[in-house]
Image 1 (cartoon, rainbow, N blue to C red):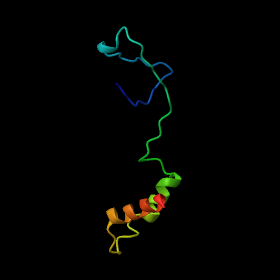
Image 2 (image 1 turned 90 degrees about the vertical axis):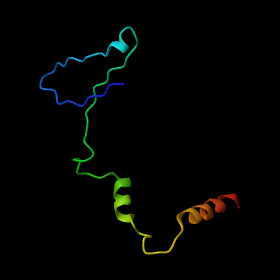
Image 3 (image 1 turned 45 degrees about the horizontal axis):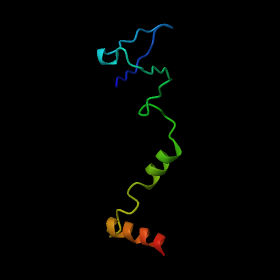
Image 4 (image 1 turned 45 degrees about the vertical axis):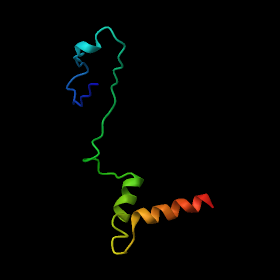
Length: 76
């Protein structure tokens, strides 16, 4: 697989096709790209992660035991 993120300077761009793809079907996509690092708007899930990160760090909770207890509730 070949992936390249570019900033085109004109409406034409030349794509290099690797030799192993010659005579095979390939898909070439042109999509807008937003860099998640520089993208200032956070998605809902990223915002939730930021707000809840470390929320249980002050409690003495065994994550594996807690997870098993939660799963057992589904078996009832």
